[in-house]
Length: 490
Image (cartoon, rainbow, N blue to C red; front, side, top):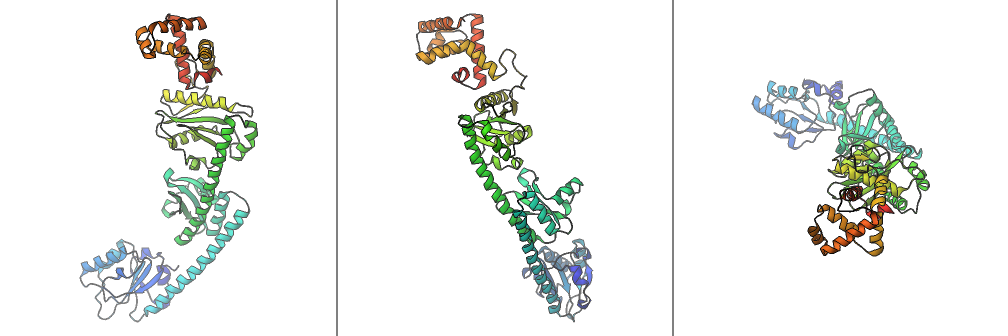
């Protein structure tokens, strides 16, 4: 489109700046002749308003207010071809225009406004023709880039070459984090350029807070409608990407369920993990809240920080289990998105021969420890901030439970007994017989019999210091593992 400066440079129009020459770069979309008192009611953004001055107030202050109101209507410039009966243009009017960088130009009364209008219209028509040609070329470039089977970043770079602009897709909801970037935009960032002043952003349809950002590269960013066309192209790309990530989420859930019930082996899914971007070490992670509330996990796979990965995710009750890259920052970012009081437990690294169910138990133990310590992450096997007399690992807990409580668990399982519960209640009540019997809803003598049976099976006397200490350690370790006793001895 033609600018005010370019109109002023056409000799045949005879235009001369009276004020606001600094705004001469404004683009002109149309030309409108108006001698009414309120031209802002009849003109649109981008218009050049042409007047003989018949509608101008005579009072200098009123002229200043008239000028301010016209500028507020977002027109591009004012051309005054003063007629014989028109009031003089006052310094107050020109001062407002100068202060706000609004172009005011004078023309000869002999100038036929239709000549000026024709010049603007011809420029607008030519501009639209060029835009259509550019849009056609953009679609061709994009189509060719799709057929080349490159990445989204490659297609962004192809669009940069066609427009001369540096392009980025940014997520405003994530603090303006860059989701995708063309090579020219990456180069600008590496050179530490700050094009914020010249940056133009548009919302990408259907994506919430995601925007397309364009900054000058080979050419200035002066065509917003063309940028909106680009936004439409990228909206389709992002919608396709979101649908693909949804499909990967669904299939990943099925794969992880198969790994947990051992109908699929880790070795069988190893190539699929590489396809999902997990080419290095992977772990089992378990997310949960300290109060057991549900996690906001339904859209977690669409987050910006997971653009390079498609982890296997499986919700279970109030937990989310995931087979993810061993990237601690990534897991911390997921934790922050899932819930305010969420924590994550991380297993040891998996191998092609790993037992996934065991790795999940490690992650569950680690997340339980994270909540106990008011931390957002705990890595299994790396936690040394512990009470010294309690087991520090799942294996140590399982070994302790088997050695001390194993006979009681087997007895209760085979005889439908209550020896473990009886010991637990008795120790919790500090050896108070009557209180414990009442809580168990049994006679005191029945409790005496049960604890004698405990001593016979374990060799530990629950009423002695050593016996009660050993039994308490085993029960406490089992409780901290967040696993059932049957899971710990099987």
